[in-house]
Length: 226
Image 1 (spheres, rainbow, N blue to C red):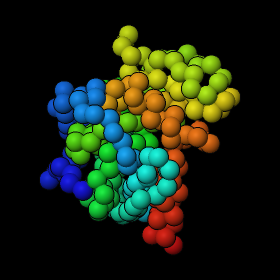
Image 2: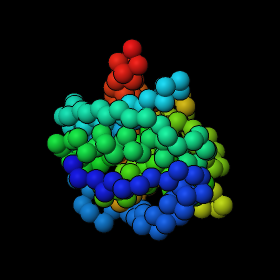
Image 3: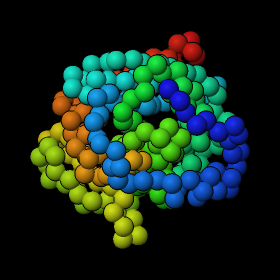
């Protein structure tokens, strides 16, 4: 698939913040295209702290059956320092390399991280969405922002707010299990995003896209560091 991979990446926190600030106005938190998501891809990365090796995996599922259509892995080296709010810059170069390997162009991307629910309203899912021009959702395990616990039933949800603005939702995907934190990445609205996440979580807390991409990148990292 085609990706607008930058020719250079920022090397300092100030430069990375400037990139986020420049790209943030491009995010579209709506569905300008008919939301026919026949294929949905999950993106995840795993790191080895000692060597700096990173493995990024993308797995594409059929949205109806949740069966794999295609999967790819890319390896790289983490060069950007650990800075909260800028973690995307540790993953993005290898993630984009993996996406470029896909023969399939998925209709929707699910990132294991934040979208608009981010201190600068520009998390990993926003960045991936802008660079791929594909609808993208961030589904995180931990939240940025303020929220109330949703009800215990599957599908219960409460808004996540930052500075008085709604930036995402805490969504209960399984009864009595911790919620996940859903936010718009690009080219999708929050209601649609939450609906898709529920459809991708028939049995487990995390979307099938994330679960399978997580397993794949961890296996790839073990193989690369063996």
